[in-house]
Length: 295
Image (tube, rainbow, N blue to C red; front, side):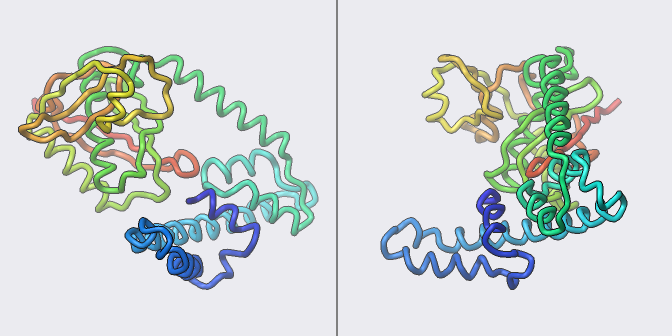
């Protein structure tokens, strides 16, 4: 959806288009095809609602990005153009589309140092790759008992985020130390305080329910049929491990393909608390959280 919206700026200025302009277009498209495609008719409210939500989020991104672009230009030598470092920051930190930076720079006859931009992107990718290579399975920094507890908690967090924010949420990475967990996930907007509290509440409720953590080995095709989540595009072998949190009696709360170690019951996790939620890059958010244990 966001990719389509970014492409839309090639054809019209979304900021000058009246509020919910895309929603009106979507309604007309639905009206035209609902008699041809039954799934369009059945899902019309969902389709229009998602477009409305994405348009609103993208407007916010564009407005914020335009302000940042102007600030970068004002703070530097106008004739020198826009540095690659500034362009990199706008794309990765603020989610501003590269193609819009190109369009704005062209309008103002400003050069953008895309060579420096690519160098910054390469350094960023190399740092991310190096960090990943140093981790154990599941993003663990070590295999201590507390790290294993934190890793198990990421499964609860993942499921809770999907329950609160929607099924578009998918894990993008994790990093576990004996002091905290760090969990990256796909989401376009900053979480509200209410959403964070709801996620915390769900995770802590599942901890109190003393849900068993069960591992099953199965073929990759069978795992996909069960609906198990496979995270961040990993290449799996023919046989995989599927970790379920819950059972038929208490209900399955989480089910994921995973190779990392886990505890056997959620009642060992203590109290879950989110300490920070922040942006990582365009469309990716990060949560840092801790487990608190009674003395």
